[in-house]
Amino acid sequence: DCNKRAARTVKSCSGATPGKALWVNGDDERAVRVAQRAEGDVLTYGLSAGCVWRATDLKESHEGCHFKLYAPQEHLPPSAQARGWVEALAPLSGAYNVQNTLAALGVVLNTAMSKLVPTFVLAKNNVRQMT
Image (cartoon, rainbow, N blue to C red; front, side, top):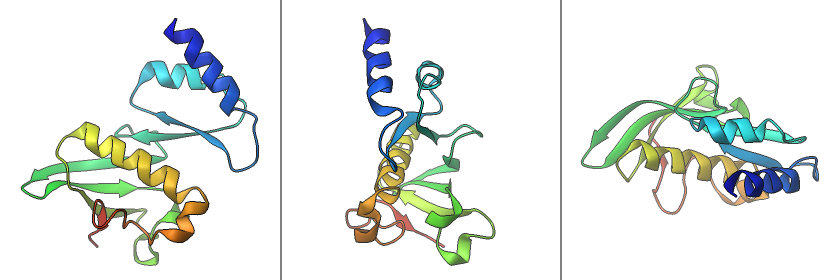
């Protein structure tokens, strides 16, 4: 059953080693409910106001999807830290692709891999800092 598998996954991710966190789509009520059982850090991404990594003001164009990216201050470039967001572009259209972009950015920038990736530049312009 799906709920039992989700509960096992939460248990294996929670209360674990320092720096390990459970990443949850904050727009998915069922995922948020299951994540409430986690003992360790839970980080959320999505379009909802309560998400740690959040996108707003999505605008489609021929380039993809432009959006405002809200993230923890330590992951924003110095010029954007005061306002708390940066303009970003995901090359694929659709809110679900923006959610996937948020998840990927969050995981990469919250791990040791962040030392290998300049702020908001992933995989040769998949997401790039706009301002």
